[in-house]
Image 1 (cartoon, helix red, strand yellow):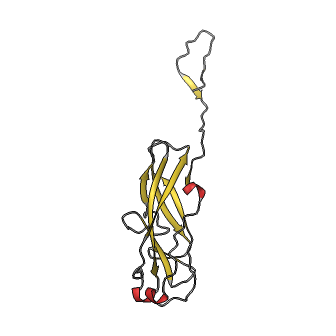
Image 2 (cartoon, helix red, strand yellow; image 1 turned 45 degrees about the vertical axis):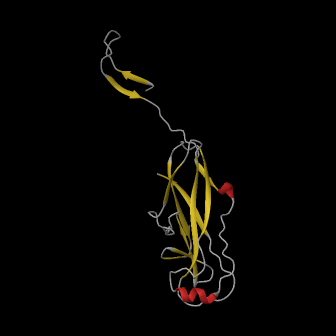
Length: 170
């Protein structure tokens, strides 16, 4: 409160009831951000996989002999309280169910948490919760594997998909 205004009819009247109070307020905002993997792209490279393995796997399934890959994603936040609770989610432009669709429409990728629970792209409720440590940092484990989207034998050649990891404050 900056000051209060009283009204009197003479200079000797007591100041009892304020007519109005003037106050000023504001909010100082500090930009908060988190950097993932020190700004580096997180890549999962599965090498060469036989096209017939995808059709044999069937829609939504991983080809036989292809193992999930695991990556630890370093998260470092600035202007965020230590021990804060955050979530990580996945965004992608091409999605089929729980998978990101690749540039080969017959193929895609599942991205999951450390327990192999898929993170559904673009789903606000499909997240990996985590907590920052005292230095406002954390490591989040991601697992990924390729799947057949259609169950059909894909065109041979390289395939890739691009997704974005997003960190939100709880």
